[in-house]
Image (cartoon, rainbow over all chains, first blue to last red; front, side, top):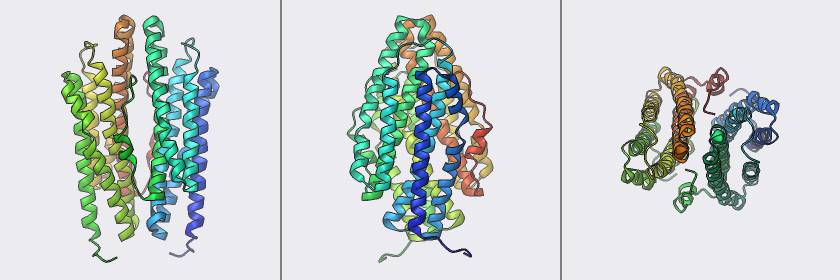
Length: 231
Length: 231
């Protein structure tokens, strides 16, 4: 090793800052995709479709930073768990960015025809998922397991809305089969937003693992009753 | 450290063996869920819904093994990349297990009514995704970047089938609106199988990263033309 090894804390803080930046970008991209759907703005959707480069670059950079931290500092215990958590959070954030693209693709096709209905629950889902993501990253930086658990608990709201949207859209399609193709796009958008919430939940679970060293992922899932209607 | 530190290679091989076991279980669970759909067997679907415990246990065990390898051996270069890849592959395999549950939930509701159509492309998607997963894990254990790339390239077939199934099902729904609710379940199953293929592709990309130290994830995606019809 020829160059000087930077201080671990400094590097970890830089890593956290990058993850926050990525979270902000991912959230913003989903927000724009859903906004483009609500106000029917194809230009906004095009921007989402064309703009995943910054997140992808951050994804690679964060992985490299984690890798370097592991190689140069050989962290132990909590520090090691923080890096492993960062590797995984990085994957979740990149997937949220991909979901923004999936939503934008579905919206592109949705906008080719008149609207099926006024959209209320889909923007609600998006806002809730965005808030979950913000809180989960907050919990990561502040090492706040209680806040992280709160995020995990609040995922049920998204599952409920997704089921409700599904049933409502099926009703629309049955009443007016001309809406089938469009309404199915909305079913997919709702499903993507539910997935968005799952990624925020993953991050929450990773924060608990990082802070307390215990894996709550499957313990939580075991007690969960499967959502009705939308599977 | 009071007990003796086991040899790194031995531990890495045990880790690989667990990932292969997990891959086998995940593949088998998706196979069973799709089989239950094709032969209309609710008992088989119930088994899938009730049986995610072994994969979840392996998921925790693999994470712990990765964690221990990092803490005790402080691996460098290729070895470090192998462990980071294993952490990520572990996540992908656990998600494939979750997808089996998602498919089984959709199938449960699908089976409450007569079939929409004879199913040909959905089992084809499932078989292809299973093969992709097998090959990607093979590539991981054999450190075979060429095989891993082959897996990534073959993902297009799933995207194509997913688009085709989507268009076909929309046609069914328009011709006979009574099928809407059922056909939408099949749209979701097809989408879950496409996601399954994405996880195998992720693993392929991780193997290239592990063997060659280069990140092909976003490089590949940039050149990709968005699928038509199913977004």
